[in-house]
Length: 238
Image (cartoon, rainbow, N blue to C red; front, side, top):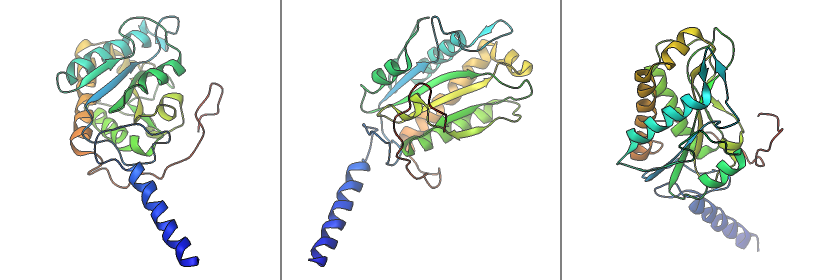
């Protein structure tokens, strides 16, 4: 009986690993407790904020407009190699839970949410947020590519594991990218430039292409899964 239980346990564990470790593409997973995607053919781009929600508003720069501009440039940089879906292509408001629902409709895809940051005036540079194990390598690639483009970084958090609605709740690999600090005068002046926003979009596109081509290769040991419940409004940010 003990031997039977041991064999059954091994078979069950093997079945779980097999289900959670797809050989290619992205696919859907409630917890993202699997390797990162490789060979996926679609990218869902979420331009943060919109409509009644302006996001950060500093020195005449409005986050919702800048995020949409970078998102459109990212879409152009990714086509025709990927099917690209933009959750918003104009100045309209979409609830966070609706963004999650829309993104999760696409199986063989990754979600990239684009934002600009707000904080201490001395802080600058990109920050990339992830939660799921299957999103780590894409987040790290994006952070590395953006850091290579941005001329100055000071005091920023870099690559961050945080349970947010757009990093925990979608059923596909998902990251949230803060492309720079609008509260830093030098960085804000760069972000105001269309040419600089183009460089940001191209950097993110390179990271996405690298992830599709190489998966987790070269990104080191993946973080262990955390089986936390979905993020909700009012949750403490983990």
